[in-house]
Structure formats: C-alpha cells, structure tokens
Image (cartoon, rainbow, N blue to C red; front, top):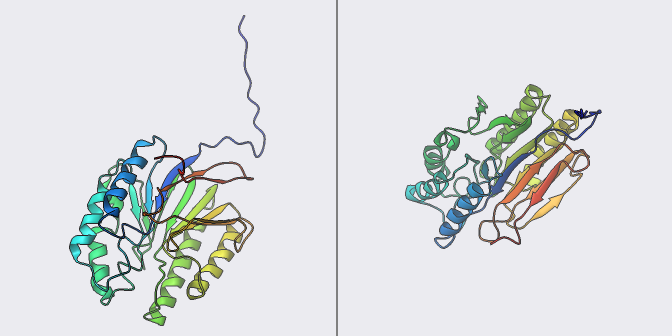
Amino acid sequence: MRTLLFVLLWPGAVCAEPLIFSATGCGPYSAKEEPLLADYVKLVGADGKSEFLLHLGDIVSGSKKAWPEAQYEKVAGILKESKVPVYVVLGDNEWNDLANPAQGLEYWNKHLRKFERHFPQSAKMNYQEARPENFAWTSKNVLMVGINLVGGKVHDKKEWTQRMNDDAAWVRECFAQFKDARAAVVFAQANPSKDNKLFCDQLAEAVKDFGKPVLYLHADGHVWQHQTGWLAPNLQRVQTDQVGRNAPVQVTVTDDPAQPFVFDRRLKKP
C-alpha cells in the first residue's frame, strides 16, 4: 500500500533556497598578509557552500602615497586563484587617498574593475552607464549591488557629492528593476560617516520603499560590527574584519523574515 505525502505551503513559508557567499576587505596590508589572503581564497573555494567571494576594497594599506602597478597586479593574481567568482569594489587606499588618485584608478581599472570577467561561471552583470564601476546582479532571487563609496579624505567636494548621488541613483534603479527580489545586499568599502551621510540618507529612503530585507555590507573600520534596524527597520549593517584579523565572513541570505541574514565569522575554524 502506497502512502502519499502532501506538503502544505502557506504564505510566508520558508521555502526559498538560501544564498550563501563570503566577504572580506581591508587587505592585504603587508607582504605577510598576502599568503593569508591566498589561504582565505582557498578556504572560501573549498567550503562547498559559498557561491562567490566579495572583496570590499582597500587591497593595499594606507601607509603610502603611491603604489606600483605591480602591487595591484599581485593582489589581482591572488584573487584570480579563487574557485568561485570574485567581485571587487574600490577602496580609498588604492585610489582616493593616493598622491595621484588618477594613477591609482588607472591601475585599479586595468587589473580589478569588472574582475568577475576572469570567472566563466560568474553572473550576468548590470553596470551603471554613468559609473561603470557600479554593478549589480541577482542570485537565488537576491539582489547584489556593488558601489563606489569610499572613505578617506574629501579631495574634491563636487566629485564626492556627484559620486554619492550616482551611487544612490544606482541603488534606486536596481531596486526598481529587481523589485521582485526577496532581499538585497548593497556593498561598498566605506563605513557610515558624516562625509557620506548624503548617500546613507538616500539609501535609507530607498530601502524603506523597497520593503524587503536589505544588508549594507562594508569594510573600512577593520573590526566586526553588526547593527540591525540601521536607518530603517528593514536595513542591517555589517562591517567585516580586515584580512589580517579574521577569515572572510560567510553570509547566508535566508527566507526567514525574522532572521533574513545569518553570519558565520569562522571564529572556531583554522
């Protein structure tokens, strides 16, 4: 006699496949940290869970006013060894805070912009026309939005303001285009500050209108921070550990409205 099993689904049932990825930033800051980043790249590729790896900017330390192109190429070479796609956003150390920001940006564009092109299995990207270093894609119905928002000094107030407005416009455009996404992750290098309040205020309004769980994921501050209900009830903020402090955090985007984002810092793992 056969037994038929019926599965009853109800509104709000937890049924979507979770999206799992890893994220790091702020490093390598020294030659000693380069092998560490290489080990972390291997760790993420071998964990059997992470779909991709985010590098949240600052691929070099802020101790110098100039970095040779070879350093950008070296870090890119480490990240290219990843078994999963790697997506990279700009940091202030390799661009904004250099004596010659234009030179740093040229090196970064050559070796790290559209870094996902090195991985055949990477997602299909959407790029902002006005600012092609801003990009977005979806995976498992989760929207991922990378933006050029950095810390450091405000070297040109007009440029700074225009970039923050462009970033906010890109977030709003992506939220509108992918309005059916079940959650979103906006990621960048900069932690919140008075210098980027213009962007943060616009992000908060966009998140409220979006109405789904949103995570703002960033580096910059070097130590772990996690804040819920940041600027909006449906907005969380996480600051990752720097490369020299801890392994990449593993992020799980769930379908549970009570806990839409789960974080594994791998503190007990070698």
